[in-house]
Length: 354
Image (cartoon, rainbow, N blue to C red; front, side, top):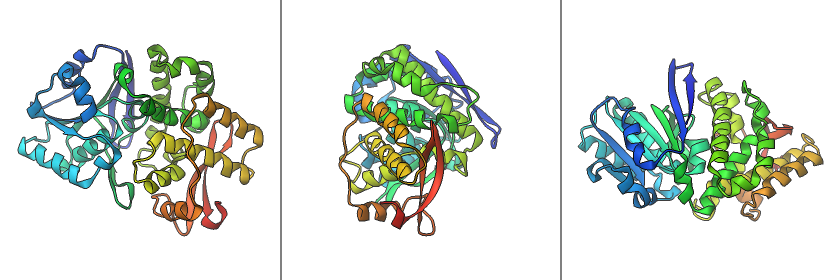
């Protein structure tokens, strides 16, 4: 088991992230060891509940089963979960447990951040994407018809428990979606200001085959590296006032793709990979990088054979990008590659993007 401690200086708070390969039937007792009160509400993905509900052992009366899909991260489900917690008479000493992918973690965390002005919650990510990204860092939110994550807050969990055995039954498309965020870390490592030199790009290149077949010891190291890089960023900038923005590499374009397709046609990771390719194209166009680094990035992305997404009309993309939280005064902010594993924040006039 790998035990990583997250320190949030602004709150004088620490919490553990545990990465392990133990049997899933042992997970319930580990989750409950982090809960102060007597009661808890488990918000669980429908797919995870079907596969592991009996093994996990939570009673039906303790669970809120959330249907799968980004479209479920909405204000109506937020209301239903909150009302369920009120009906159960959860107090501020009790807890909400999120078991599932990023959708479950985001909405359950947002409920926890607002219920009685803050209640403990435990993150149990069951997808690769949630393991390396959404379960770490405290961003919680719901979507609206105007865009993704536009209603949310920063709220840190009590603990994050990652059991890699969940990844064995993850369908190939969702697994690849997680790899889309994983590869992003290779392109931002030197900007993360980490105390460790993880050489993550080399790790990905040396272990491509084992990653593709889901070798658990390799996945354990992969998840550990991604989490350490993200923690390094979050500990320095919890609320995205500066450094944390580098985690948005590929996301300005990627979020626009998701919005234009109503979050149904492409996964988040697929959209991010499209955004990564666009970011490298834009950086090359602005002479921030040379062709060799662009080819290098293409080679890394090709190793994982991500889904190819066609180009979208620039006018449609721009309309959505203007609604992005990072847009301001007629300019759209991108995180762009500027050197090997290094990125820079750039605000670009909309007329100069395409």
